[in-house]
Image 1 (cartoon, helix red, strand yellow):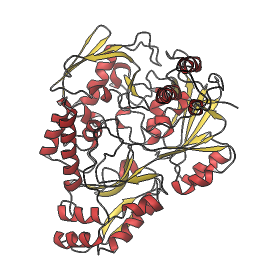
Image 2: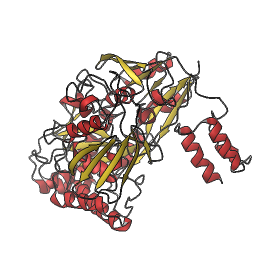
Image 3: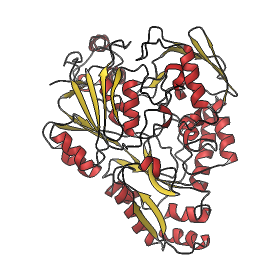
Image 4: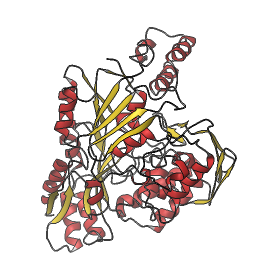
Length: 527
């Protein structure tokens, strides 16, 4: 019974059932005193409170940001998208899919998919959402000239069509995970697919854009014609871009904002002890990385890449940077949170002797290897780079840490400089993260990794229905990337947010920080 109650709690926390429904179903299970301990803390606090002005202090924003969903690459972009936009489906905290603009979806063969578009949904410009808008949105992101962060997910599309209120997709090969692609945050449905003005901030989400000041502030007001009364409780929501972590925490402590993301693990426990503030952390698929462009010297040398992978002390980064809010990584984007994770893949550890041997074998000339970093890359990125520098020095590998400005880091450094710090939030499925970042044709292939065997296995795994065979394919892909790729993934980090006690309904989501960036939609103000 306790397991069933825990399932109900997850659904309640995620806003998928009302308080009345929760209590009714819990009573039907014969709620005992012992089981009552798992009840939501706010189960007796009444329904969500409507109205008020919610303020979020967000890190990782820049003056170069755009509201075009195709180019969303950081936390503030994603937060803005969640306010004004909506996708066909959404990923729940349980990793199941939730219908949004598509009220139903189905496929008989994994190749031909149909999505029935919800009727009565309105864009902020007054136009009704249609299957044709959906088609044009996917068409724009999947175009071979598109630079969309979702294009790597859409390369297997053969044909798009509509039939009344149904959007149809025909793939070149079966893909059981394809519906998860339709929940990707880049694929916000826009009028006419956003082909006219994709950065206008017009879509069908619960909040309408009032002010767009990239790198400074975004302001939103509740859209009165939004279709779902269970989403969007506050009257106004504001995202203040505060990249400096100390200033961000100070804004929360002074009451200038109600919640903040990207809490530095070094101060999480201190904030936890402050009156009126609580820390919300959850582990998941997010990971910090140091990326190398394997088509650019000296990182085109596999021996040098292996030397650097062996020269980083992962345990030290978990202890000193994450302060226990995370776990070691293994130079691939996959951990035990993925159902088909292969635990038999050997965990890579710090080995200065082997690192020195590979470095010598690489024939590198001994000049300092420049590592670009900034606080915007991830919480503690500068300190992590310095620890990497120190551990590599013990192997005789010279690293020069070059600190870059926070503003513009995602556009001027990440995916441009050949060796830099970054982070990935992970994705709900292995196929999705691999297709987004490591498929040869993916626009966001930030290590320039191109491997024919890896690509072949990725396509094969999509259409494989036998879990054991699929797991084997993913295992082989993980080993190829771990040993031959350009990603150094030393740690998987917890999402750590800090929230005022004036906020109700906050439940950490393993998919991303701030409740998968839906806190403004699902939370309410209690005072």
